[in-house]
Length: 226
Image 1: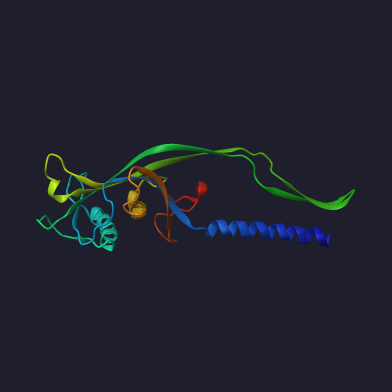
Image 2: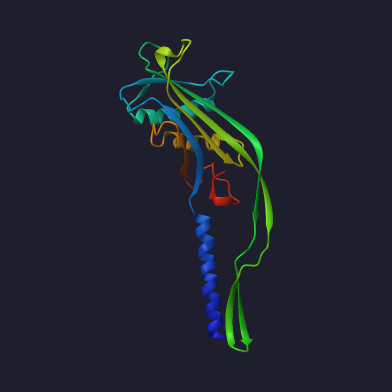
């Protein structure tokens, strides 16, 4: 009987460890990022302004917040943001974003881990492990949060053939239709390994710190952020 209780305690401890490990594991956001560019290397001491082509009512507070995120990455590269249009601007940086959906995501789960103990059988005592099949189907509504960043040669921007030196699009699926919570992490995914390999689509994972609005509790497949 004592041995059986010890085995029960052992497996209970294992389950508790797995439970708390899952609860405290790092949340992250996954984006599919595609880049095209004509930049062989990053040239320092360049100037830029940030605009958006999909803001009908002019720049918003949200745009100001998002553009500050972009500014940090570009200034870390040695570029400098200017407040307005003048002859000293080298690049025009365009930021556009959109949300599409909802999209139905159907997932099913079959089999749950369980263990059992036996005592008093013909062979004394024992324990067993099993995977009873218990199929469950879950449907979630997901949204595609899309971000586009394009960098133009400033001198060509207002001409009939504006020259793009860098363009990137990123898309991230999640159950949160509000893009503001995840926007900084999608921008971070775009600027990882900047400018990157031209013509390549890459799946980028960005860790999200605890307490961020981008994390929605309740669990999600593969521990992805909302």
